[in-house]
Length: 147
Image (cartoon, rainbow, N blue to C red; front, side):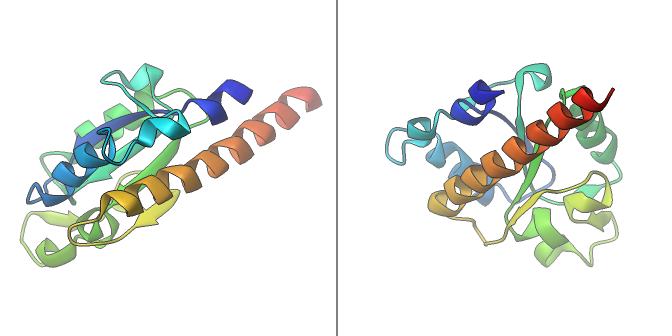
């Protein structure tokens, strides 16, 4: 499990945001902010991802997609809600079609609010998620030994 903590792969999904947080997620992955120094690799395949970065809130149209991506990820996995919309629904929370934050559909491990969230905050949240991922991996290993 040591490789998980050294090279976390992330998958990003935009729920229903204004696109501000999406641009910041992409910025965090560029050489300017250099998330790769923590071993972060962006992937498009949920089966390869350790960390699920979600921007935007949840609505009726995307809740199945969010759940499907989450369900396809292998354990241990971590969900990071990036931006206030992913955390609570943000300024869109009173819209007829917005159910709220990502935690309305899947469990969230790290909340990283901001409008738009800064790349530094995204990197901090991913690093925090790495710690959660390590804890989950240890718990899985201990559970496996019990059997």
